[in-house]
Image 1 (spheres, rainbow, N blue to C red):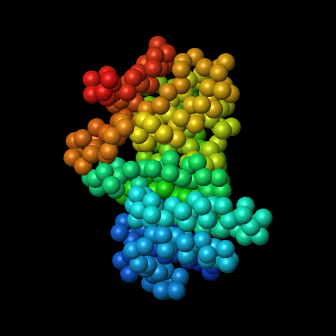
Image 2: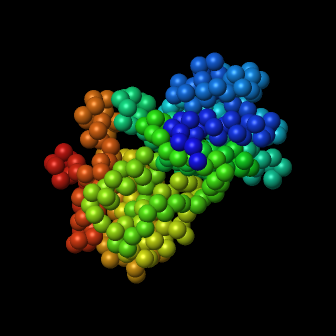
Image 3: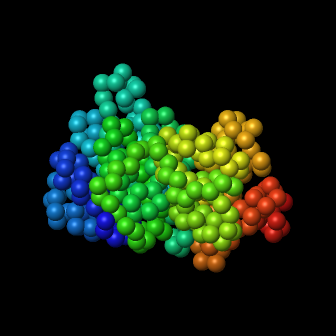
Length: 336
């Protein structure tokens, strides 16, 4: 295995797929000569040339639409949306055209395209560049949604996404780009399959992206016996793995960076409550960010994101007394 940063794992996955399949192309803003603003296409322009690695005008709607058309005609485009928020001007091309084309064409066309986007808080990019916004894409039939948590899953799942016959939204927690980890380039990962990163008996903790690291630290701090489930794929999510874990532990906590309202964890909680109700020892609950814009101030931004300290306290309360802690902004009197 080779140690590489999260962003390097993405570059390596792109390079390996482009080497193995000449139909794979990459385009977006500043992905060629500048090698990506987060260096997630470093070296690809020099290696594969201007035909397969292309800079585009600042028009997400245009190049997302171009990717839909290229995929329909047999290419396998990967496009980069610099910040997840910028997808807003191109949602129609992705969720109305790309995600629906196979259905609308009665199976005549497939749209094997990947839309990569950086997301998440923690680096001081401000409220317009720090959201996760999984809820923009998670309720779109025909679209798969992936969010890796480390270098290995970034590499393996990006390769799986490029090989998939369906459009895939690939969300990259920006704060993870510099994180280093071991990567086995021969390891394949399946879209729709969660990873149980550690096993325990008292509580199931489900997380995604950067919150997997937060949850891991919280479990260690709380000294509880927990199943840590890295969901990895949000659509379709691995119901079997999550439900089997909940039936074993009897408790479920979902940790997500999304705001309280409309977060993806509500779907996990709803399913577990419906299908594993008799196994529950404690009400399942979510730990999220508050319903406010992501702050720019560093201290406030750090408070906004779910912390290992707060998650640890919630784990202890759930395991020791089957209590559900209220969100910190309620207990600290910030909101009634």
